[in-house]
Length: 366
Image (spheres, rainbow, N blue to C red):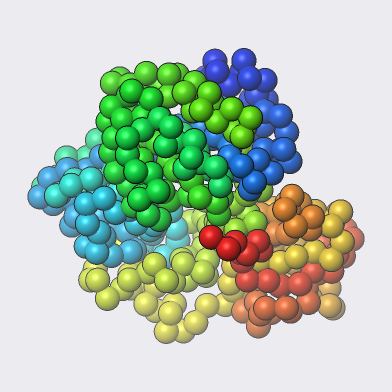
């Protein structure tokens, strides 16, 4: 049986089309993907992302455990800061990408992907040989993402927290719509200014926060589903676990070398990643734009050279609402993974010309 978030009734009443996503019954769209996408780029959209997983880690050994299982250097965090990172297997394949929030001294929150909650918790628990308490609070934690240029003005109506003062990858805790203990962060997954609101459903009236946000947003805010979330993130070149990054891809292949910190000391997958960095990767995750906008690339399509030989495969693809272009990402052999290189996407046995591009496809001023 599919799980439901605290906002299921609100969403169905708002006309949401629901789908199975990561074991949850989630809205894929409300008024339409194009309308919701445009709302986020121009005004604001409200996403329910309560299907994401939240693990809480507390104790003297909390940092040691995080350092062991993740590739970034969490020792650089201070209270009120968040960090993007990933976990790897011994062979360098990616277990998941995740966020680490430092809530206080020896206290952290890990935010993982919905489809990986059980797998991730088991993986971390397997390597849990440190003096720290690890608790999975995913089912008791709700998460709303308010995204778009108007998001700060909307949220400011409902809180005494100075939301403009919440910098990128920082967070604070305060009251929203009279509900206390809400973590307000700014990590984003759309390329727009925005905020994530985490709250304990046992302590907070989740529906009250949803209603307050939609009322405060008025005509400037649309509820948005996973469809628009996907088109928005792809315009920015943000990776999606299960598509662009998997157990069969490494951070170095996926363009995540910037957050891979072997100099911090031992972590799972370190030796393999050092070896791969020294030898160089054979393929690289790159973006591409298709010449004909109607030729939409999809996950699994082959990428070919001018002779029709396979040189890679598509991991994500869509029609860019903002650019009116067909765009995508995929793994391409290293000799062809070059900006402006001409490649071809095999779309239903027809060859569609494309050009390699380094994301983001949409260049934001902010």
